[in-house]
Image 1: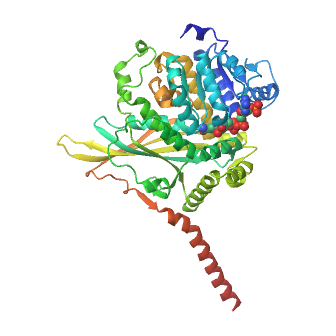
Image 2: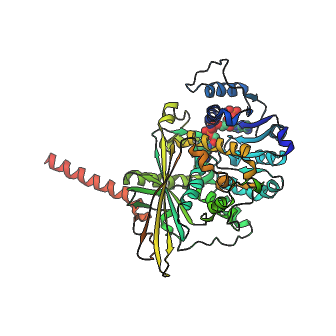
Image 3: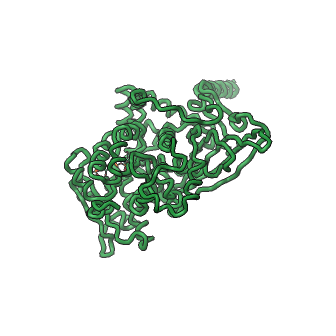
Length: 500
Ligand SMILES: NC(=O)c1ccc[n+]([C@@H]2O[C@H](COP(=O)([O-])OP(=O)(O)OC[C@H]3O[C@@H](n4cnc5c(N)ncnc54)[C@H](OP(=O)(O)O)[C@@H]3O)[C@@H](O)[C@H]2O)c1
């Protein structure tokens, strides 16, 4: 640990702890450090934000899992920093110099994140956040990677459910492939078991990210071209991005999820490009078993990755597909964007509300993400077999519980396993923490990483079609209209029979 790090007043600061997600992050930190007090002994924490009363309320809520707002003697000792404003460089500089790691829960990051990252890199403070905005993440990587590397600072975004589950889950999936195989594509199917609506800031963040799609494309074009990633086998059919398909083996309808996971996963592959044994770590002597460490990275090779929402019934899949198209179209025009930001609960059909989910709803939620990987295996006789590997990650309610677990574990790895982490830079959860066993840390907080099965086929066909039934986009659009016409015809028929 660098000398100046030891002199910091706090080990960790949670910025935005008064927010809906921030208070779950605070509660997870307190629970986690209290449950394993031996390991986390002596860690000091502060919560930071603009309003002392809001931070005090968050602290009281988090200190009592029941949500009582009375302070008692055994409440955790957490300092409050109430003059931290993400738009004020001076207050951010002061804040970042006071801590070893900063957990940023302020959103949207597209609006407030860059100044916080700049202050952290400047102060030599590790930074983790719950952003899910591809444009923000790619922009700060281009802007701060070299400075963060030089300062030996880790800047890691998307430590929340989006996208730690895809990123770390994919690395786990690839590690389940036997060494003589070559994975080609991995489709992830996220299934959410929760009937609660999420808090509205997440909708606003998502809408602004959709609105930024053109800016992101322009930004990507402005960057120097990278050599293409070498992936065996053909790309998945392009229509999978815009239409609905049915995954026969899993029994789910699936529609593409317009979130940043694909961008994050590609950044993981780019970070590891040219580093088949993982990124160089800060202190190579701290690796206890170099052979195992190298082996763990060996199978983490680029694949075509796609993320879908897994839905039980066709009608909900069509509705979801329609809703995302409407959101994408409206978000591209100033008038539409204003409407969306003013009435997000209406346009998301109640999926996001100002009050957010209740504590009970958060407690009862859960998720599972299936990873269906297809690729090849070379036989001893020189033949090629098609191979398929299925894995799954299961966990608690994703938006708040899982997100809190994700960012807290990333921050704790920065504090406890610094030597095993890459030297520095703007990285993803998998490329930064994959060598320090982030999977084990997540399992310790209740996540389950499972290898479901591995199967082979006696031919080398690229098998995208065998387990998928695809509905073309025009069918998805026409389906509600055809159904509407059919209902009108049936009603007219029934009415005419009754009347005459
Ligand atoms: N990736 C994921 O899976 C995931 C999951 C959950 C949430 N998120 C993201 O997390 C972000 C926050 O969501 P939320 O529901 O927690 O929102 P929220 O309840 O509105 O909380 C926002 C927090 O940011 C603080 N804040 C806003 N502007 C600030 C500024 N200028 N300076 C300092 N603090 C400021 C607020 O402080 P005040 O109390 O002072 O207003 C509040 O604490 C969103 O962008 C959301 O997309 C991501």
